Every structure is written in C-alpha cells, then in structure tokens.
Image 1 (spheres, rainbow, N blue to C red):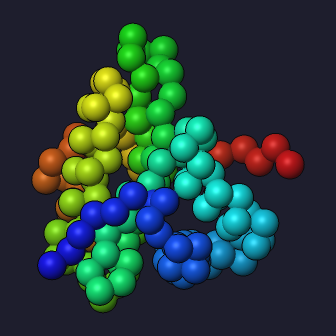
Image 2 (cartoon, rainbow, N blue to C red; image 1 turned 60 degrees about the vertical axis):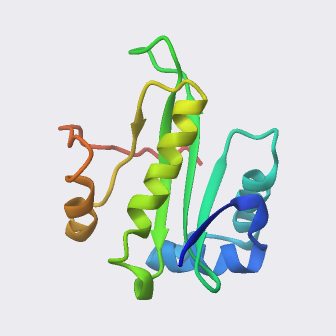
Length: 146
C-alpha cells in the first residue's frame, strides 16, 4: 500500500536518489549545491516550492510544484514542475495519485488552474495525462541567462 507524505518528511538522501534518477542525463548539470538548495527550498515552509512524495516501503516518487500569479486569472495558478515515479513502481497509479494530491493542495490554496508539461517523447506520461487533463497547443522555449 502506498502512502503520500510531504517533502519535509523525506530525507535528503532519499529525495536526492530519486531526483538524480529523474534528471537522467541532465543530472550531470546538477551540482551538489543545486541539489541541496532545491531540497532546502522544498522543506522550508516559507519558500514557494512545495513537494509531496509517495512511499511504499521506501520513497518511490515525488511531485514538486509552486504557485504564481497569472495575467489570465484573478487567483494564482499552480505549476507542477517535477513529477517522478521510480521505474519499478510505474503503472500502479502513483503518478495520478501525486497529481491528485497537488491538485487538492492547489484547490485548498485557491488556485484556479494546475498545469505542467512533459517531453514530446514521453508517450507513457501523455497517455496518463490525456485521461484527466486537457492538452494545450503551446510549445515551451527556454533561454539560459547565465
């Protein structure tokens, strides 16, 4: 049976193991300082980065999200920045449970929308998301500033 916990109940080492697996090839871009800073933000109740994790015997997935104003809404919206379930635990409904937990927290904060993005090549995730969320026609762009 899986249990949802907040990120402040997740050890740094358990979080970092999943974080680096989630990052995949991009993990080479993540310095120990970035990892520690991200984790510190997750467990700091005064920082606008929140997390929920799912654990069975040990942690097997997480969702990280934040709230921000929107020019299209009176209320803030919620961006689900990171969603990860360990490969051995996929297909058990844990990703959907994590998204549902984020949605519940966003509703409780008065947020009018929850949104996220995924890689074009991640067809397994899209198959899940298409069941309960609307696909939009935006293409994300990124510009490095450092």
